[in-house]
Length: 454
Image (cartoon, rainbow, N blue to C red; front, side):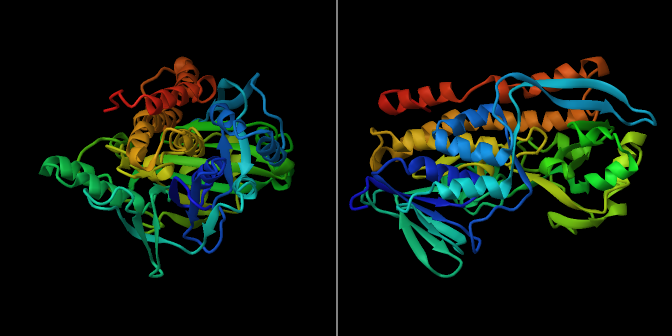
């Protein structure tokens, strides 16, 4: 590209970063570099779920990408009302049906590597990708520098690079986030500065996640008509619950269980600077992920109903994840730098919406940065528009996700006969709302620079 209007560096080649790269690649006047810390562009984790709201954003990329994704999903996209989750009260010897949640459209479930592979396949040659580039820090030009002065990136291998705009899509352990927040904190009074700096590091949410795959053949031998062989089922108990459903064309039952430490969960999003945040204590010894034996894995769920025990008896091993989140941030941008996805709003997994929020971030960033009115001089305003429109919404989704987990773990004071409605109303944004209004507002604010966005 001979003379781009600006050069964008995307730090992080996960779902969010690659979605942004694919989105921006439609603009011939923007140069794109994607820097990935790993040796290759690959995703860790078994699955990714995309609710209708976020999938409608992906459909805007065109029919080719949509069809490639649907081929890997294994079922068609629909906006009909469909049964989604069957929930049971399971903290008793014989469980009872509580409610069946209906959703307008399906949760589109993908193997994460498949989803990632589709995005990679649509990156044009003009988009440069760089592996084994883990960012240490960046330096923005000082106030008063020439307007086209670049941002300098420094990597762990000692190399450097430059760009005009930096987007941190580098996940919950982001390097860009603490660097940006330190810039933001400069010049603030001590209390405000401490409040901003308290958001730099991830915090343990109070949630531990238990994940494994169960052989459908083994479960069928033990219990031939077990409900999880055919339907998405949630077994709800006090402070612990799990959900299970068939995957891989019925070869396995996917198991996702959770425990919630009420006191820690309650303070996860409180904007304090004085209360020390507890770190995860357990087999992981403060690490975030560890392998568990079958006995260790099933322990938190041992008091659930008999139907749940049939499935738990088939567990051979599993993985424990200490679920970390990012506190509600004061900003997701500073001058020509912004953060997106988990770097900006890592959330609990209870509503399966983390990937979808990263997709929405990417599309709105593309809308403001790719607009013909946006120049290098107006990039800070474009990123401020992104922050104004996305940060409040993604913060609310994070709160709703946490509340969803608390409802399922019977930690909210909601009568059982009202629980289904409470869970559904807390979640229905994911299939009843759209990003379109925010996109229209973004264009309006970009095109009319006289509108105050503060």
